[in-house]
Image 1 (cartoon, helix red, strand yellow):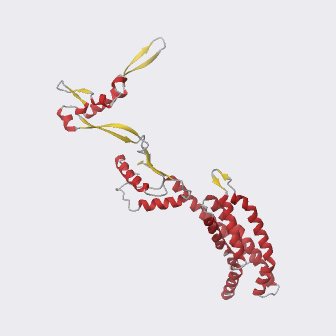
Image 2 (cartoon, helix red, strand yellow):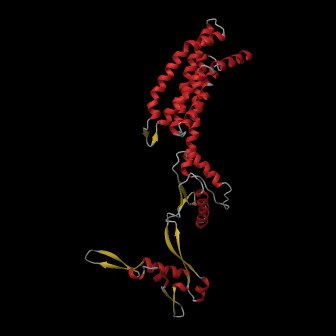
Image 3 (tube, helix red, strand yellow):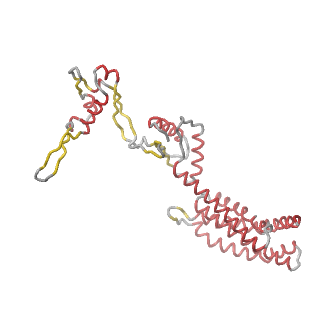
Length: 352
């Protein structure tokens, strides 16, 4: 983003050079690459003054001869309408660059001089159109890739752009897609936090304590270990549907811990010691926990192994996320949750 288009073209060329070395990108193009070649005439001011010619008159004359200009109108009486009369060079006289060079102009002294004597000709590729956002000119650099991991690509882009200095008043960003990703990530983090809070408050009401539910909440981060290891082993990108699976997982993985801790609390209310209550709850809830977990996992296998898609996004990451989290949480629920229960119970007694 900046004010001067030529400066932006120079900056975009440097960005294109830097991104071309990123291994994840297949092609890198700028808006200039999409533009059309055009003939540019740089007039020599000394020659213009010598022959008494004005640059504006020269440019206007070239435009009239090449593009034409309306000089008058013709009245069609029979049809009661007017037709514009446009004057320009014949098509055969404006086809080649050499013909443009030979265009002649009348000088105040009465002579004629060709256009090639008044300036230098260049053929350059320029922008088809100039985009502006927030009162600044925008020039885009677009990179294409076959990789699915967009976050990894943006990290590689940051490495390539490190040390890239811009003139005062110029800036760059990673584009609209990166902005959408950032917004989505913030929304997903907020959803995860809210899910954990609601689960914690619900268990606080159930257990009539805000300390013991922490032993159930511990199952959530340990289930994330199963999520990430499963995605790593299956070479699956942690994308949008995988995040949705993580949010759903927060409400599912605590179920096994809740039934375990709830039974332990009821046994303690009946007079059993804490160790006896936890051991008995583990024996009684071991089979139901395994049954509910494996029935859910088996139901998710077709989704995790299939190739079904929703608006271009595969369902498989959702199924793999749920399976990995459930398996990890089931194993750790029977070990970590009773252990944390004793810690937090000791802490509650200590506080009292």
